[in-house]
Length: 145
Image (spheres, rainbow, N blue to C red):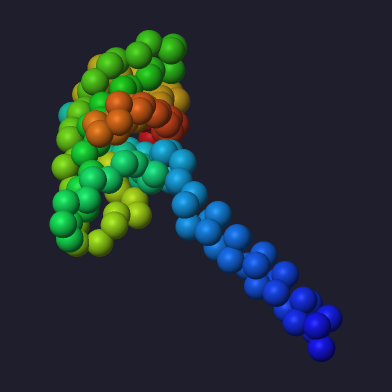
């Protein structure tokens, strides 16, 4: 009878340790799913770009969670020239539930002085609650077709 009891306690103990280890795991602060779409317009192009962010710090006050992220967007030309802060913004989000991820979006007007070629949009995001910074790039192409 004792052997049967010992055989059940170890799997239960292992399961409790595994659950405790997983519940305290902090999610990595990262950007993902970057997208960039370019639309031809009469006087040039319009760029719509976005990415998602997760793993940011959240403050909890009573029943409310809050997160604060600031971002800039840089445009990188085909010859490698970086045009800094062509877009910027602040996300100051509050919710009754813990936030899993947030969407960052920007829209730019690109005039006809820009030559056809492969460009990049770079999102630079700062978690304002911790000061942590991350970046992600997405390539897109301007063509005359």
